[in-house]
Length: 140
Image (tube, rainbow, N blue to C red; front, side, top):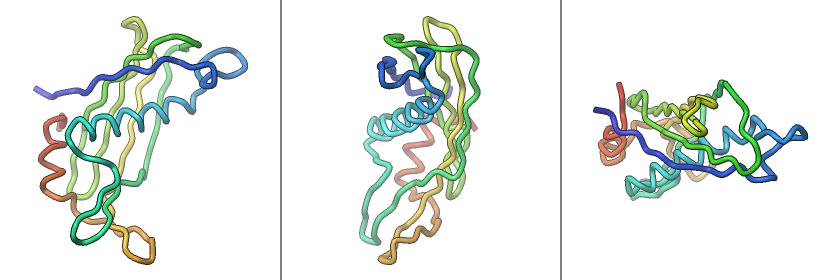
């Protein structure tokens, strides 16, 4: 059975648009925050260093589909899981609900990269120690 990491976010006033609804861009922020919380839960981080240098996971794709609005002070429940764990990439799926009702769903794909001295990323296989931990939350 696939594990899903669960967290919440309260819609802050700054998160809303002129109509008082959470601005669509906040869902992308919340997806990234949920990913970072999941990684910390696993004892990992999105930006780390080892004997060979810096490893990070830049985004290569992100999308979000919306079903209903949430407003200032609403508490949004977020579930995140790994829907694909490739050799070099990870795809996360996020489900957003409020009071048990679907609000939005989104996906983000990241690629494991090594950053050399010139600052440019090069994709590399996900280190085994990281892949093994992510596999606990993988549905594929």
